[in-house]
Image (cartoon, rainbow, N blue to C red; front, side, top):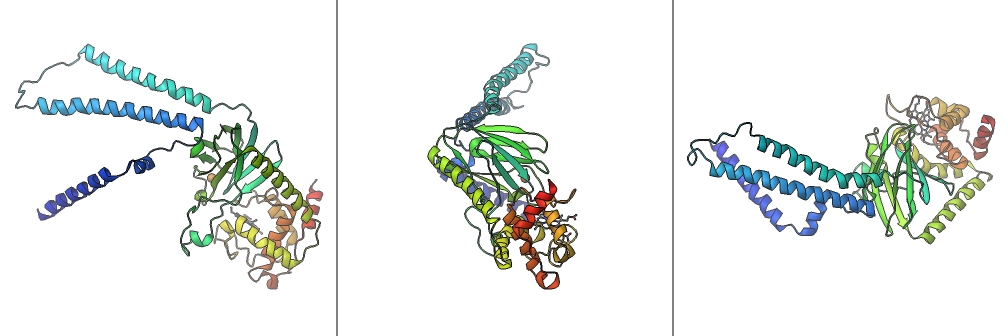
Length: 384
Ligand SMILES: [Cu+2]
C-alpha cells in the first residue's frame, strides 16, 4: 500500500516539474524542438507544409477529443440513464467517411506539388556526383574536373573519450563541399559498396545512395553559410562516422576555390616526379593512414581479430611489396578492403604503403623496402 502511495506521489511530483519546465520554456527553445526551416525555398516549403498539416491535426484532435470528453461529462449514466440509439445511421456514417476523405485530399494537393518540385531532375548550373563509400563520401564536380573524398576529421582521442568532445563532434570533415549561392546545384547520388543516404536537413535533401543507380537531388541556397548533414542509411560499422559538410559561398569565392582545387591536383601530380626518401614518405603517409585506414586496421596496425587483418607483422606488408601495391590498387574482391586507386594520388599511395612497411616494428622484421610514387605509376602503366 505504501509503495503504491509513494509511486503516485512521485508521479505527481514529476508531473508538476514537467509542467513547470514547460511553462518556463522560452519560445526560442520551443523552436529547437520543431523541424528547422532550412536554407532554401524548398526547405521552407517543406517546413510550411509541416506546420500546415500539424495545425490541421491539432484542430482535428481538439474537435474529436472535445466531443469525446464532452460526451463523457454530459452523458453519464446518472444524467442520462437511457442511451440514445443511432446504430447504422447513414448520415453520420457518410459524414465520417466523406469529411476525412476531403481533408486527406486537401492535404495531398500541396504535398504533391512540393514533392514534384523536389523530384525535378533537370541538369543544374553545377552538377556534382556524390558517391557513398564505407565510410566516406566522394564528390566529383562534373564540369570542373574536381574530385575528392571527404573523411571524418574528428580526433580519435575524442571518439575514445580520452579528451573532451569538440563542438562539431562527428560532424566535421577534412574536405568541405563548396557550392555557390543562387545557382542550381544538382547532386547525382550513388554508392560504391552498400546503400548509403545523403542527408542535408537544411536543404531538405535526403536521398538514398544505391550502387548501380543514380538518384538526383537539387538545391539553390540563398545565403552563404555552412551546413552539416550525415549518412542516414545504416551502412556498417562506421555508419555514424561519415558526415557531410557543405559550404555555400559567393560566386567569386567559389571560382577561386575551384581554381585552387585544380591547382592542388596538378601540384600533387608534380610531386610524383620528386625523389622521395623513406623518411619523407613515412611522414607523409602517417596522416594518410590515420585518415584512410585506421577505421579498420587500427591506429597501431593491429586490425580487429577475425575481421580486419593486422598490418603489423602481416606477411604481405613485411615481404611482398608487389602484392601490397596490388591490394591497395585493386581492393580485395568480396572483402571490405576497397580499391584506393581513385582516392589516393600516386604519391599518397606510395606514402601510405611505405608508412605501413616502416611502422610498428615492420621495418625491422621484413625486407624494409619502400614504395615510391614511380612504382605506382609503373603499376598503372602495366595495367593499361
Ligand atoms: Cu553510409
